[in-house]
Image 1 (cartoon, one colour):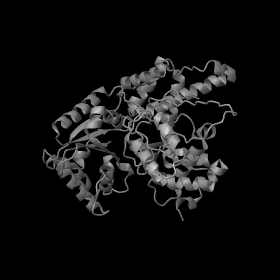
Image 2 (cartoon, helix red, strand yellow):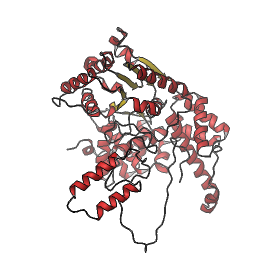
Image 3 (cartoon, helix red, strand yellow):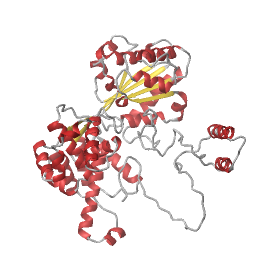
Image 4 (tube, one colour):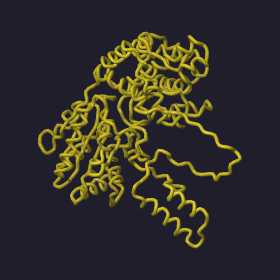
Length: 492
């Protein structure tokens, strides 16, 4: 089934068949979306290393390797993917969590003003080679990181700066940010302590080097005693000839003024601020129209249905990610309704187009915001088993746990034990975070913070009425047993 609304991309399943009689050599899978690297030095170096290893005994594998390179294919066992691939998932991090990749280089609809300001800010400091600091604020789903991702992929920005991106929800502690930055800058340190890493960074900033663009997403996670880490980082641009542009991103509007008042005392330390306001009703409509037109599905929503959906999201939060999730759920409801009316798969296959009407939008909005449906009906009808296990794990923590603190990391630890003890394959933390977002779209819970998928420090809040949820879960034997399984709360 094709998802009609997504973050500027559509997942399609493609299949092909090959005659069994045709002989072929098994080949290792390669990333078909990887962009061909113009500079072939990486490949040639790989060939030279392989040739040196088998200089005395060159076999058929070496010939295949050279043949692959001459034909523009990735060499065997080469797993490096060019970091400017245009087909990667938006705002996904690399293995170390610090390389931004994007699936689209088009600016965000309704954020043209902020993108233009960001581009001018970076280009002005790149041309003058002057240091600066910027704090970007805004609620989740307002396009902060996505807009900056687009800017960072502009050729003049990408080639002009040495870029370092760190999602601060992925660091173990506030002071460990120094070791992460050292790793990204490939700096040698005298030891593994935070002090040694900090000294290495400041020593590097005093030397002549290429302009550095340091982006710290979810910078409020670096909260520490007396805010020493945040003060230290925001003071780097004030160092003589530091040649660094610092960009911090968080949700709070007044973080630099409330948490870091000393920065306001000196003009050289005071960062500029850029606020991303929640999306308005018209902006949400414009984004929906743009996404649907790109998929040639501009008539999926009736005008009145789209107006109602946009108005409700704008009034509650202005969160575009949640608007897209709810829009996706509305379309799925429209498809189920059409199938229930026709009761014929052949009819659905011949005419797969659906039109979302006002009553379907109201039904989903009542589920998410108004509690229009009973929780018991949600659990019985449409909730997948993995999401039910997540809800059981949340209730187990809240009802039986000594520590009621609900974070993504702790929830995944408990959920993993719950699933494993029931012989159910558990999802990894990234997949579980995606399932939590689907539960959020149903109004079951709230995921706080905008860290990368699977950020262990992200907090969750249960929105469904706790006694009603417990009562609904106790009606199911498997789920009821989980609510009393306190052994899943600890690793012992």
